[in-house]
Image (cartoon, rainbow, N blue to C red; front, side):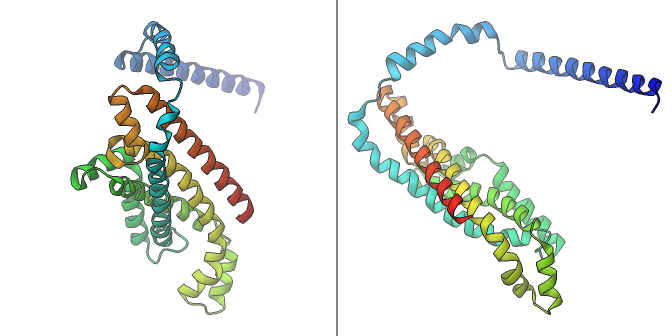
Length: 263
C-alpha cells in the first residue's frame, strides 16, 4: 500500500468515526427526549434521595432480624432447589442442544429454541404469570427460578460440550464405542468441571434473583421487603436489604472457594 492509499484509508476511517459519533449522539438525544430524561431533574432529586436514605431508610431496624430469618432461609431454599433441578434438566437438554452430542440437527435447533424462550423471558414476567396461575408463595418463586435456570444453563452447558476435545471422542468412536459409551467415556469427564462451575454460578444468580421474584409474589425476603416498603416501614426494609447483601456475599465467597477446590 502506497502513501496515497494509506492517506485515503485514514481519511475514510476518520470519516466513519465522525459519522458514528454523530449517529450515537443523535441516538442519545432522541432516547433522552423519549425517556423524558434531563440532567437538571436528576441533580434536583439528589438531595431528596440522600435525605431519604440517611434519615428514613437508615439505620436498619435490627429488632426485626428474628422475623427475617425464616424468609431468608426460604430465599436460600428456593435458590438451592432451582439450582439442583435446573442443573439436572439443563444438563440432560444440553446434550441435545450441543452440535457435538445432539443426535439430530433438527432436535438441536428445537431444544435451543425452546430453552431460549425460558431464558429470554425475564424472571419477573415468569413470576407474575405463575402467581396468576398458582397464587402467592415460595412454590411460584421456585418455579420461576427453575425456568430461568434451565434456559441459562442449557445454553452454557451446550457451549461447554461444543468446546470439548474431539480427539478423545473420535478415539472412543474408532474403538467401536456406541453413542452412550462415547458420552460416558469421552464427553462427560470433560463436561463435569464446566457443569459444576456453571451450576454454582447459577446458584449465585438465583440468590440475587430470588429477591426480585419475592417482590412480585414469589415469597422469601423479597416479599417481606416489598411489604415493608408498602407500609412505609423503611428501617425494617433496610434490615431486609442488609440481610440480602450478607446472604449474597456469603454465597459468593462459598461458591468461589468450592470452584477453586473442585475445578
